[in-house]
Image (cartoon, rainbow, N blue to C red):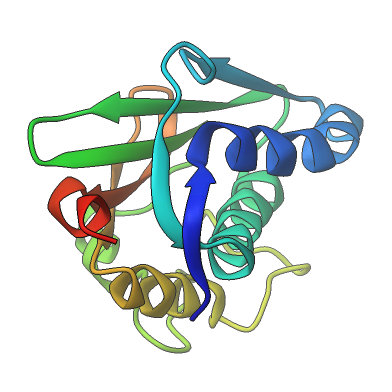
Length: 160
């Protein structure tokens, strides 16, 4: 890994920009809450975190019905920085949330489509964030779809 100080805000904004045309073509709105309010600099491998973000955005665009929304926000918690990427419906069954990050796991119901991937994307995301001493989890989004929460530990990012 090539860890260096990276603006999480700018990296997320850059990936969002690259997905803007595809999202619009599918009838989806990309919305960022507070993304550029407070600069968050973390020690990251930029290429790996970009890959993680691309995988999550790819899933959101692929599996969100139109008209729909993908909302991104950064939450500064006591011990972590959380990146939330939420989408509108459909969601996944509650019982599937913990399994989403398993290798080759695919939800066969509402979020599986003919154009679906191999089931490796979120497993790769989990591996990438664990290499950064962080975590990724999923929950039902307030928008009706899935919320992916990527957590970076502040302590890990202070001493580098």
